[in-house]
View (tube, rainbow, N blue to C red):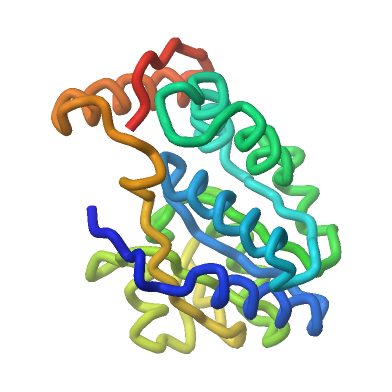
Amino acid sequence: DRLHDRVDAVGMLGGLVRDVVASGGTLLVPAFAVGRVQSLLLWLDRVFAARQAPRVPVVVDSPMATSVTELYHRYHGEHRLDEADCRRIFGQARFVRTVEDSKRLAFEKGPMVLISASGMMTGGRVLHHFKRIAPDPGNIVLLPGFMAPGTRGAALLAGATEIKMHGAYVPVRARVARCLVGPGRRLWRRRWRAHRGRRELGRRGAAARRGRRGDLHRLV
């Protein structure tokens, strides 16, 4: 994982939020459920605190990201954010778990920030949101991390004007932006060795996908 500390994430995110406020659109952010979503919420908190953009609704549509964020909050003693920080940063977002609530997002009007998985747009709920958001030039799709070759995210970065999903091609008229907002090695202090942390986090992530809540004693 790389650090991207030199990127003015507050300035860039603030500019993107201001743009969707002006257009009344949606800022769609495909993001990984572990690490990336939580870091995005932290940077958005900084954007609003610095008054770089008006406060807008922030929605996280990912059951796994919801469960992981709860763990980050519960075990705040294992990273650099205290209880008040977690309550403020994570409390700014509305978390969506059910399929029914995810579908209802299609009827909500902007401006808003919508964060959903998967991070490289290889699957997940973000595809359904992308299908309705991409054809509208008033919307923005923000790619916040590395996109592996062959993924839809990589195709967007390469300037694709249409993306195939669910057996059809979706025209891309929305603006595509990139900001390398890393998962935050310096924000989420590592207390495990890398291999142990990945193994345990993977096990807990699998439990979250099965709908069970585990006790994560150390967070990456």
